[in-house]
Structure formats: structure tokens, C-alpha cells
Length: 402
Image 1 (tube, rainbow, N blue to C red):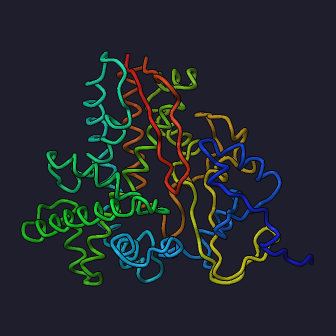
Image 2: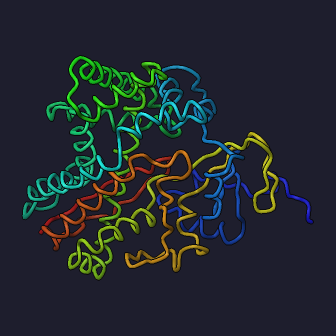
């Protein structure tokens, strides 16, 4: 048996300077020559779809506060939030934080929001029919997930502008933080947490039989979480679903419109193709850059010895264009039949996204409404682009609805 190679033999790639707005050609070239690369920060980037198996193995774990400590963030609102939320927890802490959310944020509840998502999309789309170009990101894509989660939480429509601003700023705490914006992000987190604390207090005083009331009851019955943890799960739930759904909705619509034959087919068969359109949009333009893991022991990966304590980031951008799984992976194809049963964009194992059903309902119904009411929809101006980052941000997107 050949000796395992050291990670020091891996090529080093600075993705901050190389990815820019179109990372796929770079990743394709790398994938054809090496299974893994290193970044200047010492993170190992895994490039193949098969590396997603790490998400269900006990040889690695979800990152906790490591990325924040790498940036010198060892205290304060960002650190406190990351320390308290289930997304960055493992083992017993993760079970304790996730269980009440899963029990109350149930699949049936999320599926019941499908009709509401369709009605809201119809209202928003109708307001722009025949009115000329408009900002699709702010006027529709940001509104759908924020207003749906606001309804689930019982947030008044009058509070929505502040709610949207908190989502936009606080969401930056989830990935590598722009340290120049740390003060603004932390101020947003403080305000957001205070608002959620008031919502929780209201439900404790006067339960309404809604999701938040059920969540409060579940956490009180369990008695396993601190007040900071109870609050952080709601903030985390809002942030994890809003930013990603907004960007995914934009890019899926943009890519489908950019393929007129596929857009026409979708318009002709809304119910038959809406799931396929969303599956392909999520694959072709992943909003989440990758899934980082920490090794708990030395492991072997594609002939390399990965030491204990190494950070491995599974690149979703690369894995979802892997020709080992997807035929003609660089082609956008809503007729694709090679999607895995469980879409990798929602993660895997114990940390698979609890809001998957809601995100799918929002995207599928919104796109179907646009195709039904505005089949002549078209992009105006430059094609939208996604920036580098843990959660890729869309730069702009203007649309006209006939």
C-alpha cells in the first residue's frame, strides 16, 4: 500500500483573489488535477461530490467557534450568538437546541405555508405587471422569505422594514466576518435579539397556539436551554432561511429566463416542472459556498493523511458541478434526472436544514406564480452575479414583468 501523502503537498489556492464572480472555471480546472487544495488560512478544500460523505461520518464534526477565533473574535455579540445557536453546535448541545425547533417547526407546518407563499407571491408579482423594470431582489426575493417567517412568528407588518434590515446585517455573522463591519453587525444582532426576546415574552404571557407559542412551551417543558439559547435558535432560524432563499430565488429565475426554451416549457407545465426548476437552480448556482468540518482524528482522504484538528471545507460550488455525479454539469438543465435523492445544498446528517420544506415551498410557488402571471418576464441590464463568501451575495437584479 502506498504511503499517504502529507497535506503540505497539496496545491495552495487563494480563492479570495481567484474566485471573483465566476469560480466555476477555476474549480473545474482544479478538480481535474487534484481532489483537494489548501487555502492560505490553512483550510483544506474538498472538491468532489463524494466528499459530502464526511457529513454523516463521526470522524469529523461541524465547526463551532473556530472560524470566529481565526478572525480574533473571542467575545461580544457575534461570538455569543455563534456559541449559542444550533448551527454551530455538536453532540448534546446540538441535540438540546435542535429538538424543540424540529418538533414545532414541523414539515406539515412548513408545507401548510405553501398556499400562503403562492398568495403572497401573486400579490407582489401583480403589483409589478406592466409597470416596467424594478429591483427584483428587494421588491420580491427579499420579501417572500421575510414576510413568511414574519407571519409564522406573528410579527406585525409595520415592523417588517426593521426586520429586513436586521436580517441583512445580522446574517453576516454566520460566515467569515467583514471586520470593518463588525460594529454594525453586532449592533444589529443586539437589536434583533432584543426584538425576539420581546416576542418570546409575549407568547409566554399570552400563548396564541402558533409556532412560537409551541416553541416556548416545548423549551419550558424540556428546561434544557438557557434563555440565550432559546432566543438564539429563533434568530438563527430566521437568518439561515432568509438570506439563502432570497439569493437562490433570484439566481434560479435568472438562469431559467436565460434559457428561453426551458422557461417556455416551465410556463407550459408549472406543477410538473416547478420542483425540477428549483432543484436545478439550487445545484447550478449554490448560494452556500461550502460546508466546513473539523477532523476529530487523523483520516485518509483521497490518498492524503488529514491530521486531527484540520478544517476541511467541502466545496458545494465544486461538488454540485462534479461530472462523477452530474452529466454535462456546466449546463443548466431543468430536465436533469441525476439529482441525488437528498439535495446537498441543504447539508446532511444531524445538521440537515430544518427549513428545507419551507424554502422549497417559497421558491417553487413564487417561480410558478411568475411563470403563470408574467410568462413574458425578462431580465433587464446586466446578468446578476454572486460574490465570494460563505453565503454568496447577489449584486443586483432588475426584471420586467411584461
